[in-house]
Structure formats: structure tokens, C-alpha cells
Length: 61
Image (cartoon, rainbow, N blue to C red):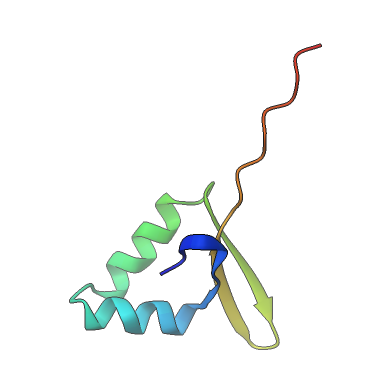
């Protein structure tokens, strides 16, 4: 759902997961386990989730 730089509202993510038979608790656990990869930002009163872009490695000095 979040591939290719897409953002999705948290409630829509939970709704899509429920339609696939995945509980909200499982979604929350997955989000917590993806802390370094999953980003979130608030727009108004809504939270949006996205996969963080990989940063290129810094050149060795």
C-alpha cells in the first residue's frame, strides 16, 4: 500500500488491513516494528504513513 513513495492516511491503512483480515492491533505492532523504515506526518487532524526513502551512504573520508 505504501510502495513507490505513496502516503496513506492511518485510518485508511487500518481499513485496508481489516479488509485483508488483518487486525488493527497487528497493524499497530507492524508500524512499531518498522520504526526506522516507516514515517508518519500529521496534516490537520489526520496522520499519514509513508516508507522513508533510503539515504545514500556517506562517502568514507
